[in-house]
Image 1 (cartoon, rainbow, N blue to C red):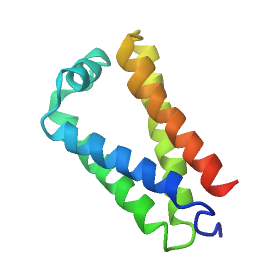
Image 2 (image 1 turned 30 degrees about the horizontal axis):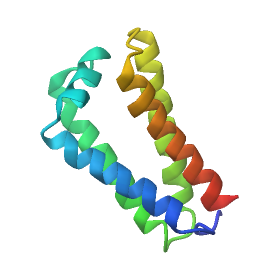
Image 3 (image 1 turned 90 degrees about the vertical axis):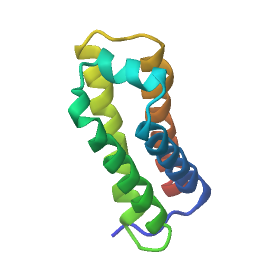
Image 4 (image 1 turned 60 degrees about the vertical axis):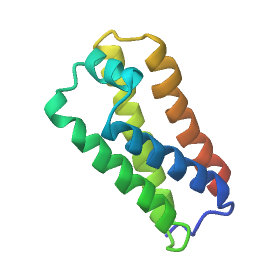
Length: 118
């Protein structure tokens, strides 16, 4: 089983970013609404993203103390953002939201994994 992160702060930073993203998604600002509408994600399902991101943030923070949890959650977050990238490409919605939000969060997730567990 993978141990707890060697460096705590990349995992904590990713958890903070995901918690902030979840909080913003409660009443999504225009750039989040544009993103979700651009990939044609049904508005009835937007609430699921709040649950997923909140659970991921909690899993990352708990993983600072429980072996394997942060690693597993971080890998799942990378998978989530890879799926988001696929949705953007498939919908041909490659505007600023894709480059900044989607790829930015994917980069942060990969960077956190590399720094915390390398």
